[in-house]
Image 1: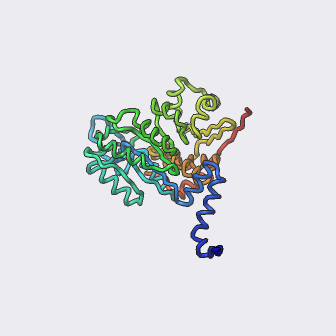
Image 2 (image 1 turned 60 degrees about the vertical axis):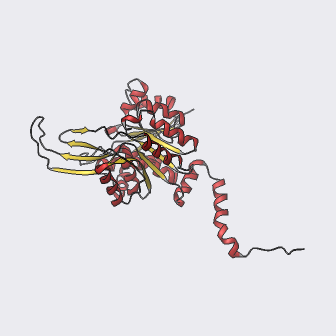
Image 3 (image 1 turned 90 degrees about the vertical axis):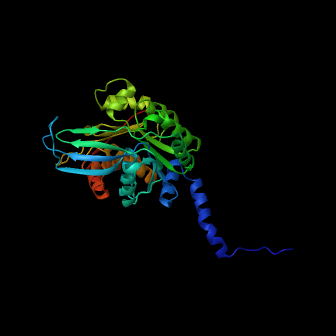
Length: 352
C-alpha cells in the first residue's frame, strides 16, 4: 500500500494565487469582475479609430474670408476620436491599445506621435494616406474634416482578424467616423463579432449606427442633445423632458446612459435616479472642444472598470471632458482631479 504523499509548502505556493483567484472570481458580479481584472493587469482596453487623422490646429486673429490670413500659432496632434480616448486613458494611468487603419506619411506621423507618448498601437497599414483635419480657431471655431483613405478588402479582413482575437475579459471602445467605402454598417459588423465573443463595448456614434447598436446593449452610450433629438425625432424643452424620455426609451438598452449638454452640463440617467453635473464655472474661456466628448467616455469607462461606482465615475468623466476643453490637447490628471473637486453634481431619485 503506497504512502499518502503530502505536498510540501514549496509545491503548494505556486498554485496558491491561482486558487485565491478562482474563489475571488467566482464571487464577483460582472462589473466587479472587470474591476478586479483591470487592477491585476489582465484586462486590456482597446480603442478603435477606423478613420484617424492629424489634427492641424490653426489660430488666426481677425480672420477674413477671401483674404490672406496669417496664423499666430499652429500645432499638429495625433487625432481621431479613439486616439483621443487612448491619450486620456494614458494621462490617468490606464494602458489602452489603439486599433484601426493608418497609411502614408500622415499615418507614420501618428504612429511616431503615439510611440513618444508610450501609447501602444496595433494598426493595420493601408496604402492610402491617413487624412488631415483642419481646426481653424478664430472668434468662432471652424473644422474641415477630410474624407480619409479607401480601405481594401484585404486590409479590412486583416483588421477584423484583430477584432476576432480580442478576449471576453477585454473591453473595446468604438468611436469616430468610418472610412467611406466600408459602409455605415461596419461598426455593426465589429459589434456582432464582439457580441459573439462576449466582449463588452461602448460605441460613441450617432444616426442609424447608434440605433442598431442598441440591440447589443452597449456598456455606455453618450449622445449629445442634438443626437438625442435626432434619435427621438422631437424637441426637448428642459432637462426633465430629457430625463423622462431617456428613462422610458433608452435606459435598459445600454448599461449606462450619459447625455452631454455641451456648455449646459451633463446628465447620467438610470431607471430610479439621475445625476446632473452643473456647468463648470471658470475664469478662462474654453480653448478646445476637440476630444472633450471622447474624454468623457474614456474617463467613465476607466473609473467604472476600476471601482464600479456610478456617481464617482460620472464626476470623474465630466471632469475629464472639462479638463480637455480647457487644455491645448487632452486633459492631464492633476487638472482633472482639481476640476473634479469643484464640480457640483445634483442627484434626484424616482419611484418605481
